[in-house]
Each structure stands twice: as C-alpha cells, then as structure tokens.
Amino acid sequence: MSRHRKALEKLYATPPALDIKWDELKSVLEHLGYTMLKGSGSRRKFFHKGKGALIICHAPHPSPNVDKGCIADVREHLKANGLI
Image (cartoon, rainbow, N blue to C red):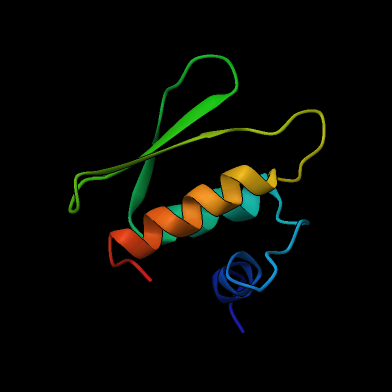
C-alpha cells in the first residue's frame, strides 16, 4: 500500500488518528494537487489551482503531529471540494 493511501486512511479514520505527522499531511495534499504557498509564522497555505481551493493550517511545533482541529478542517475541505 502506498504511503499516500496509508496517510489518507489515517486522515479519514473514525475517530481521526491523532498521530498524523506534518510531513504525511503535506505529502498527501501535494499528491492531491495542492501546492504549499509561503505563509507567515507557522501558518501554511495549500492551494489547488484546478479547484481554486485554499487550505490554511498551522504547522505543528515542537511536536510533529498535526492537531485534531487541522485534521477536521482538512477532511471537511477535501470532502466539500470533491477531492476524496
């Protein structure tokens, strides 16, 4: 199974996995067609040119795990834009 598939399964698990690493999330979004844009501080923006869709998340620190609020936002955004 590809690492993108594993990360997507973690993202869509019920309840959502709390051990999703920032690198995993970033990789999945890039695989789905998003490009990470420059943000300020720990804020990161991901833009999907084909959909004109923007996701804004905070890169976690010091822990590498993404917080559950970001996971919920990303899940909802991807569903709303028909990307999953």
